[in-house]
Length: 310
Image (tube, rainbow, N blue to C red; front, side):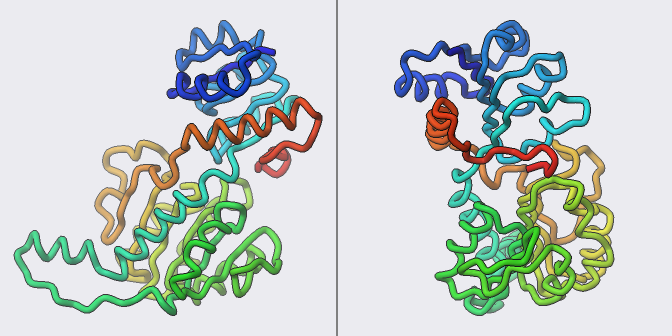
C-alpha cells in the first residue's frame, strides 16, 4: 500500500510511520508539484488540508484521507468530491488547548497585561488579583477538546457549564445545554470559551445581540473558529465595555490583514492561531491506530460526516 504524507514536517511523520509499518510505501513532500505527481498512486493520504485540497480540486482522491488538523473546513468546500472517507485529528489537542485556556484565564485574574502596561508607564500597580475559585466558565463546544478543557479546569474550583448540539449530562459540567441556550448562559458566565467547529449552524453566533447579554467582567476566549464571531460587533462591544476583554486565536481571514479593526480594538489580544498546534508524535500515533482500524474494516476515530461538517 502506498501512503502520501503531505506535511510541512513530512520527514518526522515518515520516520514515525516507517518505524511502525516498514512495509508501507511512503511518498512524502510539502511541494505541490511532487504531491500532484504522486497522489493518484496513493490510496491513503495523511496531511494538512491546505496541501491536500488542491489535489482534490484537480479530481484526485484517496480511499481514505487522515487530516492532521482538527478543523477540516478547506476539505468541505462545495466544489470538492466527497466520495472518500475523511477523518480529522481527534484526541490529541485536549491538554495543549486546556493549557492555553487556563493560561489566559490566570493572566486575566492576575491582571498581568494591566500590570505590564503600568510598568511601561512607570506606574505602581498594586491592584488585588482574584482567584479562579468560584469563577463561572462556559465552554461552548463540549466534544473531546471541550471535555479535556473542563477536566483541566475543574480542580481550580470553577463552576463549569457547557453548550453542545443537544442537551446532555456530561461530567464535570454542572449543565450541558443545547446551543440555542447560548444567550442565557452567556449572561451567566465570567468566561466564555468558544471551541465550536465551523459549520453553518455555528457561524455569526457572537453578534451584537449576544454581546449585549455578556457580563461587563466577562472574558471571551475564541479558540474555535473565526467565523463564529461577527468582528465589527465584537469591536463595538469592547468599545462600549460590554465585556472585559477578548482573547482571539482564530480569525475569519488569516493572517489578519493590515487595517483590520482587531489590531487596535481595546482589550483584545491576538494569539495568531497558536492555541493548539499539532504534535507530530501524537498525530502519528492517531494515524497508526486508524490505519490498523482501516485495514481491519473497523470504525475510524474522528470520521467526518460530510452532511454535518464534522
